Structure formats: C-alpha cells, structure tokens
Image 1 (spheres, helix red, strand yellow):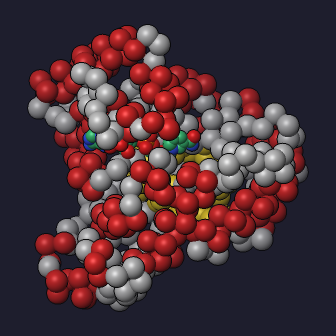
Image 2 (cartoon, helix red, strand yellow; image 1 turned 90 degrees about the horizontal axis):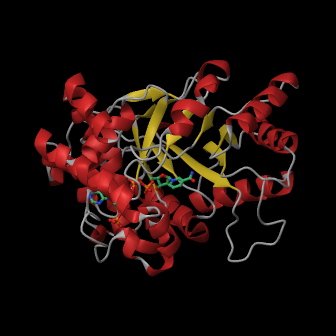
Length: 366
Ligand SMILES: NC(=O)c1ccc[n+]([C@@H]2O[C@H](COP(=O)([O-])OP(=O)(O)OC[C@H]3O[C@@H](n4cnc5c(N)ncnc54)[C@H](OP(=O)(O)O)[C@@H]3O)[C@@H](O)[C@H]2O)c1
C-alpha cells in the first residue's frame, strides 16, 4: 500500500461494504480482522514524473464520465479503495468533470477512506469551468480563473493543496506568460506542487517553459495527452524534443480509447456502456471515428491477436502504453471494480510479454 506506513490506523482502507456508513472510520486493523484476503501486496511500479522527483504509480485512476454522473458514490468509493489497495497513488480529476461533482465525490470518498494525505496525489484541471454556461471569467486560463478554479477544487476535493494542476487546454484568449505566472504564484503559495498542461501543442509547452526559465518561475512539469494504440503521434513524435529539453513527464489519458480497445464495441454499441450514454453522442463519433469501420477493423484485428496470444485486450492495450518510457503514468478509467482489477493486471502483461509478441502487435496497427 503506497505511503500507508507500517499498518498505522491512519491507513484505513479496504473494499469494505458501503453499508458500513459514509463517515465511519474503518481502521486497517478492523479491515484485516474482517478478512485478511482483502490485503494483497500491490505489484505496482512507480515512475518519476519526467525529471521531477515525484514518483507516481505507473497506473493511476481518473474520474472522467464516471464520478458524479455514471456511477453512484458507493461504486466510486469501492473503485478508489481497490485502486489504493493495488498501489495506485495518483487520482486524476478536473473542474469540468460533472461540473465539479466528480471532485466532490472523490474528495468525499478519499476522506471517508482516511487515505493518508502524504501517501497519495490528487489533481485538478482548469479551463472549461465548473458551471453549465460559464461566463468569460468562469473559464479559461486568465490569472483570475486559474486562481478561482484552484481554490474551488481545493474545497471540493477537501485538500489544502493540489499535487498536480493542469491547464486542461490551451487558451487562445490568455497570454501564456500570464498563465505561467498564475501557476507559479499558486506553487509559491503552497496550493499547487506541480503544474502542467493537457493537450497543448509542443510549441505552446516550449513557450511556457522558456518564459518560466527566463523569469525564474516554475516551469510545467507534465503534460496530459491522449495516448493509446489508435492515437500516438503527439506523444511519440510531436513531444519528443520536450522529454530531454524540458524534463517533461506525461500522465496519459484514455489508454483504452474510452473502452473501444477492449473489443466491447466490435459488434455494436453495448447497452449501459460509455458510448451508449445519451449525453455522450459527441464522444461516440469521436471514438468510433469517421468512417467507423476503419477504426473498428483495426480493433477487431487487435482483439483477434490478443485472443491468439491468450491475453485480455484491455490488459494488452494498457501494457502497450507502459512500454513508452516517456509515459510517467497511465490514467485508467473504470465504471466498476471488476474492470479496474482487470486493468491493473496489465502490469503483469507488460512484464511477461516478449518482443516477438509486441512486434506482432505493432504490425496489427500498421
Ligand atoms: N486531460 C484530458 O483531456 C482527459 C480526457 C479524457 C480522460 N482523461 C483522464 O483519463 C482518465 C482515463 O480516461 P478514460 O476513462 O477515457 O480511459 P479508458 O481506459 O480509455 O476508458 C475507460 C472506460 O472504458 C470502459 N472499460 C474500462 N476497462 C474496461 C474493461 N476491462 N472491460 C470493458 N470495459 C472497460 C469503461 O466504460 P464503460 O463501462 O462505461 O463502458 C471505462 O469507464 C479519465 O478518468 C480522466 O481522469 C483526461
């Protein structure tokens, strides 16, 4: 268990039933007494966030779509507990996820589980706003919104500082210099430890780094890009100079392309799944692509190869992300614990599979 100490009562955790009550202090000793099988040694790996000294779990866990909307609080609690029990030490969030409710649920269940604050990292992201129709002050990367959004996230997540704070997208209406200064102030105030970007171009990141370095300010430490077998150019090519030059780390999102790479959509949209959600019509076309069959054909080839190799497609796809040494952490998503537990075992596939199998995998996507 990361940072859990030597079994101190602080480290209250476990897949305890929700019926135990939302604010019950469940001690490690009590959960052990309830069933030692709940405790397995985590086989997690930890990676440095770029050139920083922060060691994140190679597999982390995020709240997009699920927390505060698709799933109930009890399931969210079980997911955080399962992630923590398996060595996950980074939980990802954003102001925009369910308009702040994802952060509220995450803050609530982390407090409920009594995770030790020095043993986990939590993030937020600023840009899109946390209200239905944000006015120009309630979104973007101006000094004002960066400041306001940070303080709102701290309250929702019930923490004194954010470990990682991202600019969720570039803002054409805010000078990069102003955003860098705003982030630097938050770091100097102790409200943020590491700041970074999400889906910025390499040129925009390089501009932020140059401005920070030229003015003695904290430079961005990380980028949060999409990275998976179907979407790899930016991470592998566009950002390539930044890993050495800027010491950039990456915490990558949608390793399964919203579930597509599990093969669950090979024969159509599955009821109850992410792409079946009425509010996510835009995501369905983004994930399936235009035309859908070209992407699906690749996925069908991939799932056939996974079957031949005797591997779960989800684990294989996540393990593939781990092979890129510039990936600091793969942010997993899951709507239920069984999915998360399956996906966490990607580490075993990463360690087990030989170069021959990886070569065949690359060929399937040529
Ligand atoms: N910075 C950004 O712009 C950005 C954008 C997106 C995400 N993110 C972050 O990255 C995290 C992960 O992204 P993601 O949720 O898109 O990851 P993902 O792994 O690509 O998709 C996760 C979804 O796939 C389905 N799934 C996962 N494992 C499965 C399994 N073993 N079998 C069948 N279905 C499975 C589940 O959806 P269903 O069960 O509902 O089908 C699950 O919610 C997010 O939570 C968020 O923190 C960041």
